Amino acid sequence: QVQLVESGGGLVQAGGSLRLSCAASGRTFSTYAMGWFRQVPGKEREFVAAISRSGGITYYADSVKGRFTISRDNAKNAAYLQMNNLKPEDTAVYYCAANRLRIGVSMTQSGYDDWGQGTQVTVSS
Image (cartoon, rainbow, N blue to C red):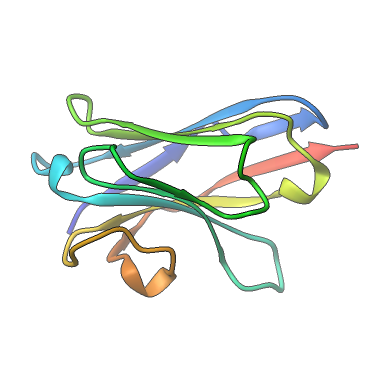
């Protein structure tokens, strides 16, 4: 199991930017695909972005494409989500997740094995 800790959430005005970080424990971070999901109370957790082990392949939800960028630094055991041009509908708890056990990059919750505790992002209008 890998421990994941998100940081970087907060309150921002519409049009602003935030950068979320996900710090991972262990020495095999480069073997995990990573993903970001978000959840609003009363709704299902939804996919935001995912990145392959090397960082060469990325996927995005249509709702964030062109505004969010996922990246990773395997030397620092960290993944990031740069969020630009934020909208009120981006308000949610954001979670990072690690895919340790499966080949490929998943866009579904079932494709991930470990989850962080989440960080709140609030975008005011």
